[in-house]
Image (cartoon, rainbow, N blue to C red; front, side):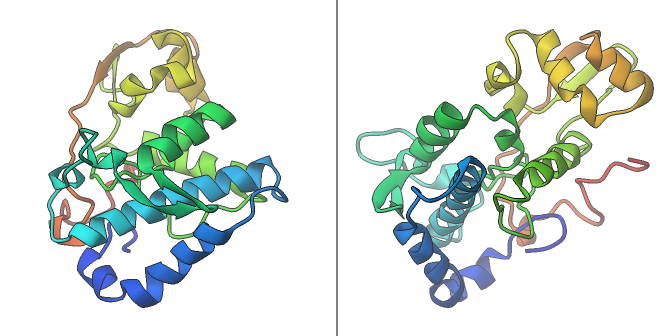
Length: 230
C-alpha cells in the first residue's frame, strides 16, 4: 500500500497466503465477548477492510469492485459471503449495515470503511485499535473531508460539494442537510467552520468514482487526500 492508500493488488495476490490469510484466520477465531465497545468496533472495521481486500484479490485483475458478480440471491458483490468473522460467515453488507451501523451508531465509520474504490476513504496504513480508535477516526475524517477529489468544502462562497457517501448515509450524521454540515464543522477552521456550523451552504454531491483503488490505476503524482494548505 502506498501513502495515498492505494493497494498493489498484484503483489498482495502473490503474497495472499503469507500476508492476508493469517490475518483473516485471526478474524475468524477472535472472541468478541471480552472486548470493550471501542475494541469491538475497531475489530469490525478491520474485518470489513480485510475481507474487501480478499474479495478483490480473489477476483483480480478487475478495474472495479462492481465488476465482481453478486451471489445467486443478490445483486452486488457486497452481498457475497466473504468468510468467517468471529466464527460466523458474513457478507460485507452484513458487517457494515447490520453490525457496524446498527450496533455502534458512529458516523465516522464512513471515513474508515474502504470499499476498494477511488472515491472511498483511503485505506489506513495501520489497523484500528480500541485505545486509539477515537483519534484514528478523527484523523480519517479530517483526511477524507479535506481531500479535494472526494469533497470540496467549500466549492465556492455558497456551496459545498460533498462525497456521495454523505448523501447515501446522511441520516447517520444528522436528520437534515444542515445537521450534516454541523456534524462536519469541527474538522474545519475560521469562516468555513462558522458557515458549516450554521448549515449555511447549499449542498451538491460529487460523482462517485468506482475505479479500483489499485496503484496501477492511480490518479497521478501527489497525494489526492491532502489539500494544499490544509
